[in-house]
Image (cartoon, rainbow, N blue to C red; front, side):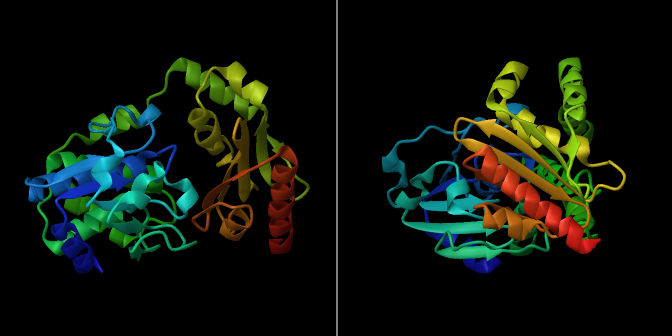
Length: 313
């Protein structure tokens, strides 16, 4: 499949790279990294990256997205990264492209592109993109390697999650053959302003538990606005506050927005992905998400997660 994707890339003079909305480090790392690789190996091609703002990952070089007209998609190849479902793609104009390719590491939910590569054995899409470059003989650059390494760090939890394998470390070693500052990555990813540390403390005090010890936080729209923090910082940024609680195998962070309730679901033990899919989302076995229409639907999801824990006791 790697060679098929490479041949498709070679056929087009314009390539537009998409990823999921509300990007995390992996979505941006794989997107920016692939762009840098293609620019190095195919300098005659026009390469674009599109999508919504990087927000807390704006420290990453190349994270500012291109603003392009619809006409740019004419005769172009669109590559979609790190996305399991159509509804999650940032900038739906990928459908205007002449052809589409998807490279992803999530559990397969639906067909998105003309040519599909989905490999759940990779801890990150960035790792999959790096492996694609390595095995097709494409030249890697320090800038590309740094972006891809950042993506690998974020989706592997600094190589702590059980999605981390020997393949992860081999790919990381390959990227580290390039010269880039890993300390710069870690400083930007994990150094916190005091205001954010205080916000985490406030969210710790909001943690509740179901009958069978599913930990959860529910933040109303009014509460979210009162924090002054952006949606990503509250939703995905705070789900980790429940990750180290002894005796908790599933935890979920619910955040109300104007568009619905964001549900970030995590587990150290159970496959929670089918429940995310049931509510219109997707992701990985132990890290998934969805957006539901109401608090009532969010509580129904919580009840399903509680039953999953009960069944496993």
